[in-house]
Every structure is written in C-alpha cells, then in structure tokens.
Image 1 (cartoon, rainbow, N blue to C red):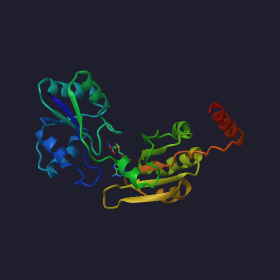
Image 2: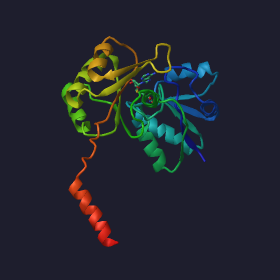
Image 3: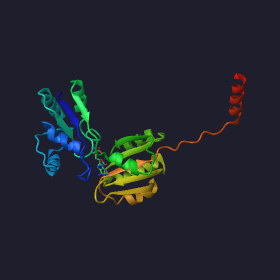
Image 4: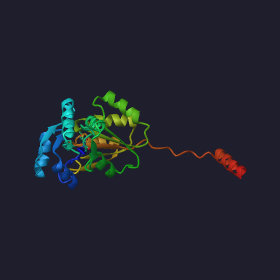
Length: 243
Ligand code: SAM
C-alpha cells in the first residue's frame, strides 16, 4: 500500500536521526521537503540520493496534488521539514489531512523535537503540558493569547525567535506573572544552554542571547483545597448513618 512517511530530522546535531529514518529515506520513491536545499545537505551527509519535491506553506496548492499523484501511482513518499517533526510548527498538516481523506497509509517515525528536549530538561512538571508553538509577533495580540493561558495549571511550551525573546518574556511577566521558567537554547548543538529561574531573572540574561530557543513556563500554581471541618464532620455523620 502506498504510504506517506512523516520523518523527523535533526534539530542541530546531525547524528540525532534514527537508523529507521535513514532506512525510510533510502527506501521511498520521493521526499517532500520544506526546503530542498537544507534537505539535500542532510541527505548528502548520509549519502542518500532521492528525487525531492518542494512542499511548504506557500506552494501547497500545487505540491499536495503532486504528492497525492505520487501515492496514486503507488510511490511511497517521505515528508521532512528543516528540523524536528514535520507539522510541528512546520508544514505538512494539510497534506496529512488530504492523504488520510484519500485513504492512503500515514506512518510517523520517532525522532527529534525541540519542545520535548527542552521540556524534560527544564526542571518543570512534565506530567501535564501544553505545547503552544509560536505566539503572535505583535505584543497586543501576544498578550491576548497569553491571557487565555493564564489560568491553565499545566506547563506551557513556546517556540520563539531570538530577536523577540526580550519583548516576549516582558509580556509573559506582565500577563502570567513572575513564574518559574526555563529557556532552552541551541539544543543538541555545541552551545546548548539552559537558563532557569523566574521570568524576571531570565529576561535579564536572555535579552543578549542568540540562536534557537524554546521557552518553558510553569503552569498556574494550583491552590491546595482548604480543609473545611464542618463539611468533613457532616460527611462522616452521613457515612455512619448509612452504616
Ligand atoms: N519542527 C520543529 C520541531 O519538531 O521541534 C520545530 C520547527 S520551528 C519552525 C523552529 C523553532 O523550533 C525555533 O524557532 C525554535 O524555537 C525551536 N527549535 C528548533 N531547533 C531548536 C534547537 N536546536 N534548540 C532550541 N530550539 C529549537
């Protein structure tokens, strides 16, 4: 059965790609790539030669039918983005929807994802979390988005560009308050770094930092329920009465 493979690629360190991902990239008939020049570099490093199709946000009206046509002709197709998982703050969502609609198989491989690397090393809770991706660029819209998240009791994960990190963290401080956070940058690369502290502490250090960044913010602290003696006695009475 013709299959669409979703193949995660390294987020920095070129070695962080699974042997299965390389096997699939070697085996498929064609690779749909967000940026064919970037993907060519990866393929060259692993000595893989494959026809590439450019597939991104701005050409999906033509690239999706092209990919569907390959599947129709019994070709299997791998989808990759520039880094990490395709579809995760990257192109591919509409393609997957169309492929599912046409009843072809969709298979997703394990691999690198910046949010997950950052979350597990952040020191903040990993039990429940919300991956938000990128906030809006404009401060007014961004604050509105943050406002919708302010009562959420779970760890929040954002992607952010270095030139916006200072203003983004200022907005976080204003809307969410001075919570604990972790800024994880240049993950899996030579200058990987975790900056942990409260938002007001981290913003002072982060404003001079460059590179790729994930921002992890503690969820709204859950208040312990206050113990109500009267209700407790009533509950015990009720329990005794029931036998
Ligand atoms: N698809 C990718 C994934 O699965 O993680 C995310 C792609 S998104 C266009 C790019 C953003 O991811 C960057 O702006 C940054 O916020 C984050 N990112 C990607 N690689 C990273 C790295 N090595 N270290 C820290 N953040 C990274």
